[in-house]
Amino acid sequence: MAQPPKTPPPSPRSPPPARGAPPPPKGPAGPASAALPGVRAPVQRWVESFRRSDRFFKMRAGIVGSWVVISLLTVWAACPSSGPSNSLGADVQVLRDSLVGGQQLLVRNESTENWTEVVLTLDEGWRREHKTVRPHDQLVLSMSDFKREGQAAPRDFKPRRLTVECEQGRAAFDLK
Image (tube, rainbow, N blue to C red; front, side):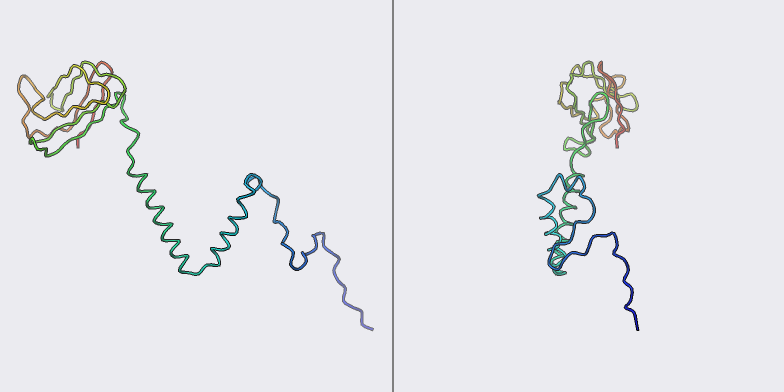
């Protein structure tokens, strides 16, 4: 007589779930699932709904998501820096082709201190002295405001470097 085939002994695993019953949880619950118990189920439902959606909806979602990412990157890149990165808190800009004619320099005191006994020096020794520059004040200077040996700098002079010196410190700037 033929013997029935031998069945392997039962494994130490738990028995399979009955039909219609929810599957058992996979792995131990981590600290994230314990911290946000009310968030996990809605997120899982949203992910499953997204998986079941058609291709065109997914493409539209990708376009909108890309637009949001590009917009956020643009706003981040357009934001000004945290301010001047020198010990004086000075900011210098070159104003080219102004209505007055020639280049002008914009020098701003972005610090919270007064600058006293200020001397602005252009690369070849052209100097401009100023008694005080208050916090957040700005000076707009044309090239003819700078003097060397009693002579004014020519209007078409294009300086390469500006040094700001005062009792509170010193800062040098490359003008481009």
